[in-house]
Amino acid sequence: MAELDTSSKDGKGGKVRSKKASTRVDLTAMVDLAFLLITFFMLTTTLNKPQAMDLAMPDKDEKNKDDQLAVAASRTMTILLGSDNKLEWYIGEPGKSAPTVEGYGKNDIRKTLIENSQKVKQSFGKDMFVIIKPSDKSVYKNMVDILDEMHITNIQSYGIVDISQPEVDELKKQGIYQ
Amino acid sequence: MPRVKIKRKSTSTDMTAMCDVAFLLLTFFILTAKPKTPDPVPVDVPGSTVTVKLPEENVATLIVGSGKVFFDITGANVRMQTLEQMGQKYSTTFTQEEKTKYANMQGVGVPMNQMKQYLDLESDKREAFQQPGIPTDSVSNELFNWIREARIATKALNGAELRLSIKGNSKEEYPTIKKVIDILQKQKVNKFSLITSLRK
Image 1 (cartoon, helix red, strand yellow):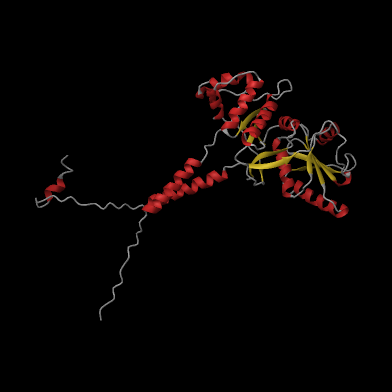
Image 2: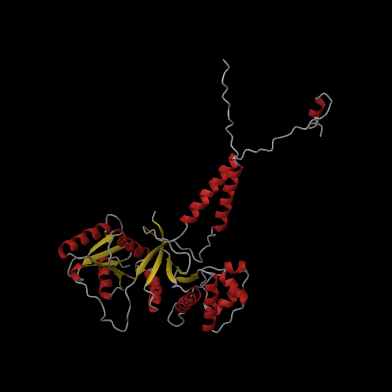
């Protein structure tokens, strides 16, 4: 092409010297990019690992059912998980103390758990025992949430137990079994 | 007096070595990163504040979503061994090719009587196939046997206890989860993990 060849004719007509270009390339930008990608891959690989919440269920021994640890009713707190992300709790035996309907979260069940465990600790000198009874209308998230609250409030003794009919009736009465 | 000349040093450094190291590390991280495989059903894992990580090996995951259960084990050898044992139990023989195919899959939820056909499908057809989930009813409790055989295979091959974990959808109704937990408890697995994500 004519336009490209114009430069050579401008010279003195002597030897055409080819300019020796330096072989050095500025690598700064390349290094920047590489380190950016490294950081990205490092962060994503470690963050992607799933978290595991350990859960130990009470031993279900069908042969000898009497082999169970009796816990004083006055220092047990029963939590019934109902529908619509609502739960109901009471202390002691069902029907003897008024149940309370609450939600999950910082200002609801967590406060209650802390208050109750302190109360039990003061009056009995022992830790509170929490029984969690998820109903058929609760969802998996509710169960994980309440177990998480146990971790947060540092309650060591708790168990997940099947719900019984009177407790289902109780949930129905409160309107959180739909 | 002669002036003392201060030599000006060039500010540009040789970046070649640094670049080499950076790309070496980059290659390493890319190669070790495991590609995230999609779950057979959309699973929205509930959040929690627990920060204990799940171990990499000897873990079986029960993926629970939309009322279906899928079973996943880590380790290709354990997977192949488990499939063979399951085949013996349900009188199906799997070829080596089928076993290798199964070893490379994740989260399978197909009843045993369809397993052979499922493994023989082309890979793109297999992805389109709607997996019905592993039967958990009392008539053909295949999930129970899967867990059992996987535990036996892990014990025999790796000499370690298989760790069971449940990966459930947030909105999954409790009866489905309870069914899975009951199956675990029936074989005296009272300790297991629930997979959660970081709470937002």
